[in-house]
Length: 510
Image (tube, rainbow, N blue to C red):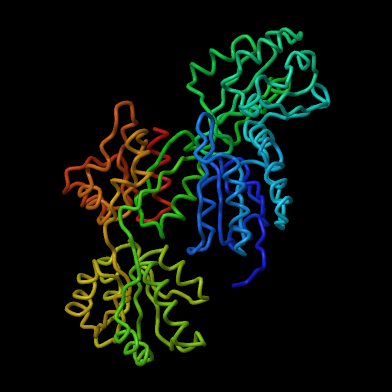
């Protein structure tokens, strides 16, 4: 066993939006053996981690310390002493009210090597995403960071807010929502006028961001009326009154709307990203799970005779990924694919093929297997043509039958993955859906509709939750929704993610 010590990386996870994390932070997350993360570190950052990395949630939040600070420090030391590369993910910046100083103090005592990776702190991010200039040549030439939450073992707070009552600068209050009435009282005692502008931004940089504005005299009531809770950044100063009139973040087309995405986890990323770009908040519920499953002997036989096929047809992006994973293990040259022509069931599948610098020769106007068969037979002539269909364990029979019986093609199938329904009863995202609901559930295939029906108990909404409309990606999915007697709120005119998003925007605008 090696006696070499590992290293601890104290990383600022930023304010919430993964796009604001530094390049260095991502590199270290991807390479980490152990990741120790807080409540305010976005769990999506863990998607970058290795599958075999150890993840330890230390979930500290106001009023709830699931693991005491001294135990966190013990974990850091213990894992590093085992030679592990340890990432400590802390919301915001480690050295801005993040207790990073305490943690490196312990690491130094134990002679553990460490590195600090700064992050975007909440005050800077909240102000930017709310359009508030923290400094302004005419209204504020100083910025003060303060906290309303110090060491709970202290008998009293060391900050005398009365001393800040006559500032002409900007005050940024961290972790102060629960103490705000007392803080306001002290600021006013120190001479700050009751009409001083105040902004409160909850969940800054996330698509559930919520902002409320008022004055020292009104802000407590304003917060209560708006239902603002923690985590929230409080900004006090004249700059709040001079915030941007254009809401570049909260003014996006789908901001404030919550969508449930029902694609398999491997496929959800693109749709989620497109929705989030429009300002929507997304709950990913993978109704189906896609995993590679294939017969090695059949794969070997197909690859041995690959050159005989005149067409290769991919029925999904999942099939493309697994096919090329296997292909590159068997061959070291893309030209071994041979002169075959390539067809894809839809644009998303075509994009996955094009990642391999291959041209897709045929994509049907409608993204479904029936349209693919019809158009290939009509436009290309398939009689006696040797075809390889790369598919999964479902929905391949109709395509193959049409090509064989109507097109008179010679068809081989290569199943490379299986689709199965997931159990969502204990899924955290499903639990959140039950509590909060959503504005829409987006169905991207008939199989997701069937899974939704089968797991009805997992989607029973609690009192006060939003009741969603149902969105369909196209006619085939709509047909299944209708058969199951589920009302369709909106349908994409063309079966593509782009048109699906457009249909959602149109529906909610109307």
